[in-house]
Every structure is written in C-alpha cells, then in structure tokens.
Image (tube, rainbow over all chains, first blue to last red; front, side):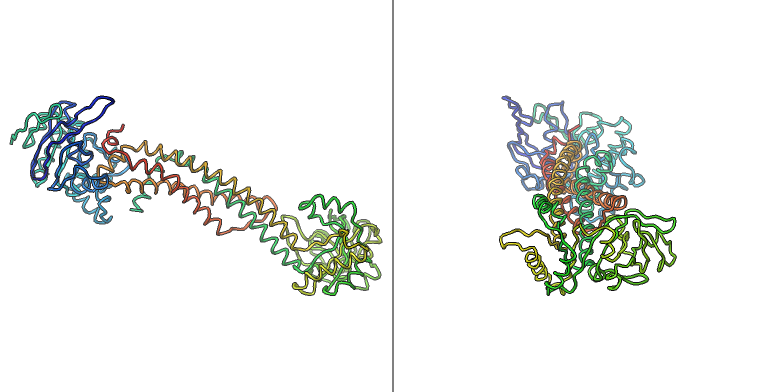
Amino acid sequence: MLITVKGLKKIYDVGSQRIEAVAGVDLEIGKNEYVSIMGPSGSGKSTLMNILGCLDTPTEGKYYLNGSEVSNLDDDRLAYIRNREIGFVFQTFNLLPRANSLQNVELPLVYAGVSAGKRKRIAMEVLDLVGLVDRAMHRPSELSGGQRQRVAIARALVNNPSIILADEPTGNLDSKTGEELMAVFNKIHESGNTIIMVTHEENVARHSMRILRLRDGKIESDKIIN
Amino acid sequence: MLIEGVRIAVNALLDNKLRTFLTLLGNIVGTMSVIAVVSLIGGVDDYIREEVAHEGSNVFTVERINFLEAITDLDKFLDAIARNKKITIEDVDYLRENVPSASSVGAAADRRVSMSYRDKWVDRVEVRGRSVQYPILENIDIFTGRHLSQLEIMRSNKVAVIGWDVYKNLFAGRNPIGKTLKIGREHFEVIGVVEDQGTVFGESKNRFAYIPITRFFKIYGSRESIAVKIKAADVALLGSAVEEAEIAMRIRHKLHPTDKSDFSITTSKQLVSLWENISGSIFKALIFLVSIALVVGGVVLMNVMLVSVTERTREIGIRKALGATRLNIIWQFIVESITLSLLGGVIGIVVGFTIAAIISIVSPLPYSIAPWSIVAGLTVTFLIGVIFGTYPANKASKLDPVVALHHE
C-alpha cells in the first residue's frame, strides 16, 4: 500500500475544550488511485489532508507512507518527505507572486538540491505537460486563474512525487475552467500518478475513482465509483 | 543556493525601495562617518609625516614659549608666558659653542608685513630675519639667484630672498633679481627666489622673504624674543643635542638644579605626538558615535526583517510545503539581511569618500583613502546583517506550515 493510516486522531485543546478534528481514521490508499475526500466544513477533511501531506503530525495513530512510518518525524524530515513524495495543489494556487512560472515550478527542485541547468530543463518539460511553455516567463499576476492552477499542478509534478494532494483545486475557478482543469488531473492520473483531492463539489468528485465521505472526524462512507 | 538566496533578497529589497533605503540609514551613516573621518585623519597623518620628513626630524627649536603647549598643557603654557626669559642673539652664539652634537645653529625672528613692487602689493607676508644657516635648517632650495651671504648678514645689508608667491604676485614671471621691493617701509634688493614650497591645509607656504637677521633687528628692534633652530649632526644624535641645548641654556640662565627651565624646546616629535593625541581622541569619539549609529541601524534592520517575515508568512508556508527545511528558510532571511546590511555599508563607503573628497576640496584638510577602513566597514556591516538577521530568520523558520499557508 502507498498509504496506510491506523487509528489516526488529531486533537486540539482550545481553552478547556478538547476538539477531535480527526477522531480515529483507518484508511488504505494504493498506487495510482484517484480519491476524493468530501464532507461538510468542520468534518476534518482539511486536517486529514494536512496529515496525509506531512504538513502536520497526528496526536494519535500511525501513518505509513510507502511502508515507512512518518507520523512522528521532526520538521526537517517532514520537509524532506514533502519535497520528494508529495505534490501540493491549493485552492488559492499559492504561487510566489514575484517569481515567474518557470521559477515557481523550479522551487521544489531548488530545495531538492538539483543544479540550475537541470532544474530549468525539468521544469520546462513539466510546463509543457500542462501546456504552458509559452507562459514560462510570466508572473502569476499576468496569468488567468486556470493558467495559475496549471502552473501549480506543474510545480506539484516536478519532483515526480508519490502523491498529488489537491485541496479544493477548482474552488477559485469558474465551472468551465474547472472542467478543463479536471481534464488535466485525469491526464496525470492516467500517466500513473496517485491523486488525493479534497472537494465539496459532487461533479468534481465524480472524476475520481473513489469517494471518501467524512463527518465529525470519522469516515462515514468509502465508495469506489469508477 | 547562495546565488538563489541573493536573488530572492535583491528582489525582495527592490520591491520596497523606500523601506530598504530607510532601513539602511543607520548603516549608511555609520560607515559613512568612519570612512569620512578616517580618510581625513589619514590625510593629516600623511601631511604630518611628510612635514616632519621635510623639516628634517633632526631639527629642533629653542624658544621662549612653545605654542603647542597652549593645547597640550595650558597651565604650563600660561606659566611660561609669565616667567620665561627672552631668547637673544647672544644665546644663539652661546648655543653654537655649547651644543657639540649640533651641525648647525641659527637664529630666527618672524613678523608679518606687506610687501610691494611699483604698483603691486602682497599683504600678510612673513618677513623672516635669519642668520646664514637657514637653508640647511629649513631645507630651502633656491629657484633662481642665491641665498643670503655671511657678509650681507654681518653688514646687515638690505637684501632679500623671496618666496614663490611674492615672486609671482610682484614680478609676474619677470626676472626679479636686482630689483628693489618694499618690505614694510624699507627698500630691499631681491637676490634670490626660493622654489615653490606648495600648500598646507590650503595655506600657501610661499608667502615669505628672508632678510639678514641683523637688518631685521634694525627695523623692528631686538627687544622681542627670537627662536634658535638647531640641527643635530645626525638623527641618532638628536637626543643628546636636545640635552646639551637644555643644559647650556640652564647654565646660561643660571638655573638651580631644582628650578624648572625658563625656555622651551620643541622637536618635530612633539608635533607628531600632539597629533597622535588629537587623532586618538577623535577615533575614540568616532567609535562611540558609530557604534550607536550601527546598533540603531541593526535594530531597525531587525525590525524591518520581522515585518518582512510577517508580510511573507504565506510565502514561507509555500516554501515549507514544497520542502524547504528550517535551515533553508534561515538561510534565505539571513542572506537577505546581510545583503541589506552590506548594501548600506557599500553606500556608506561611497558617500563617506565623497564627503571626505568634498571636505578636502572646500577646506584646507587633505584626505587619503585607507584600505583597512573599507574592509572594516564591510566586515562590520556584514556582522550586523548576521547578528540582527538571526532572530527574524529563526522566527521565520519556526513557522508552522499549516498556519503559514492560511495566513492572509
């Protein structure tokens, strides 16, 4: 299994209250799966996403990625895993505003210690994959929303990660652009990538193979649809 | 990684030009002051060294009062005015016989007057009454004509050897030898012109005329104290020559061994040590003031870096999500703070030299560029960048990526 999660809990102490954002989740996700995580706000899907993305660590439980435990690593080891194993696509794109598309896409390679020449070559290849080679020198402010999100996808792909984690990737796009973007996700899924996507839109989720529904920090349902 | 860091830093700094400049003020003012003051002090240093070498470090002066003492020891100076005895032409002869380590002993008496030739005037020119040894004692070379002769001095002839400015102003390039000029109310025949002596602190060193000291006494009287210039036979003999002169003068003034000397002896070493005292004090004050400027500059830098960290919380979140380690983030912000600080240092150095150059143009002060001051300026501003950048950089590196990513 690519991802194995056992008894996962994330508990926050807010004053005297204990909030279980994730209240015991068991989950397995295999290679080349395409999973949507759905649920109302406050269901814990963002917290689960952060833990799966190694941005956060669980309070209790185990998380195995590619067979090795990552639930209690220190900051720098988590950074290493994020850099090599995980590609993020955010709702708000999260591109560096002062850097052009190429520089944004290169960024994970910078932290992976790849040389400048090689960086540029790989980044251009990935930009070609999302159809934005001609926008390589444009800053995010000079791009449309759909183009920005494709730059973000290129950035997520550039380190050839085990998982692409997308958090409401179409949330800031109109429906037509959103559909175009889903086509890009379908394409990268077909080329062998594993995708986990948080969304609250049914017609976005239907592009995936499997839908997980969360409520009150627990998995309510887990269905394979395609 | 270094080039990447500097690129990020330069971009971030260019995005906030005004803020960057304001941040740099402390560093600019600090390094600027060091560079300007060090350059000016260095210039005076060079001058004094050259001056001492020119006069000859083995020449010293016996005179009634040492005016340097007005700066170094005012009480002693006032005391000297009250009790020191006049030095006379007879003392010169006495010293000539009683200072065996001296190669030459001469008398000197000066006064400022105006000089004229036909319808041309020069004001405030020094008329220098001298005995025949003056060319050796004062290291004076003739441009044209000849020096005063022993015979002319014995006869107190009305002859003069004039300085470059007097020659230029009164004779405008024509041959002055044999011409008659007026010094004060007296007529003198020009027998020589001294080579151009240049300027010091913007003041020309060419406004003088040498005349026989005997003639000087006839015109101005011999009641005023004169100076005795003594040249030791060798630099190594300077100490014994000074000692011999001191003993000779004390014997001549019939002083008891416990009495203080009622005359003063000035060596060029005293000028050097006076200057060392003055420049030492200036340096101490400078280090104090510059430290304040730099600490203030450093605190401002730290403040701005903290603002920058807050403003770029989201950027830090993105970088961390993409795999930046704590060290990557610390490195990014330290490089930025060093770049910022060094930029201030570089601007300060350039402005400092400019100020020193401008001051030396509009004022008599010379200046010289000391390479060590540039190295010091860059090193100190580099360290400020490291020291005051560490806290903000560390703070940035500790940000929780989840929180940072959702920062608005």
